[in-house]
Amino acid sequence: MLPSREEILRSAIFKTSRSGGKGGQNVNKVSSKVELVFNIETFAYFTDEEKELLKEKLQNRLDSEGLLHIVSQEDRSQLLNKEKTVAKLIDLLKKAMIVQKKRKPTKIPKAIIEKRLKNKAATANRKESRKKPSID
Image (cartoon, rainbow, N blue to C red; front, top):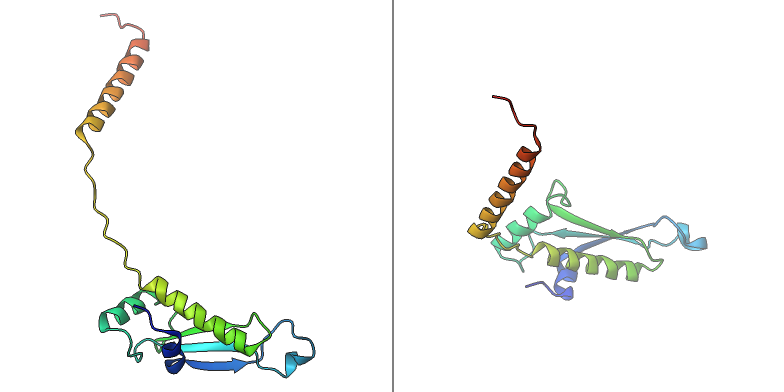
């Protein structure tokens, strides 16, 4: 079960800074880049097992303190960038919470094994018949 947008907004920390790229006259005045900092450990919504699963799946994205950073600077609007970071976080959590099913190894049917061995024997006979007869 995933947390709602409001629960994420209550627990996440947002940092803003000046964004690079297009912006015209506002580029040096407006802080439109948004960085969302999310602490999985202190978020009370998840159980301990879910927290461990998230840490394991997102270990490449966590910093040394166990914080998850998501940045958005695509839009000129700080509000749109904030919404995009929240959407990215929800999508990331959704993908990380999926537990893959254990693969069941299947047994090769006897008919398939026999067919392969017959083909192998037929090929060996065909190649054997191409050889010159030996003089004994």
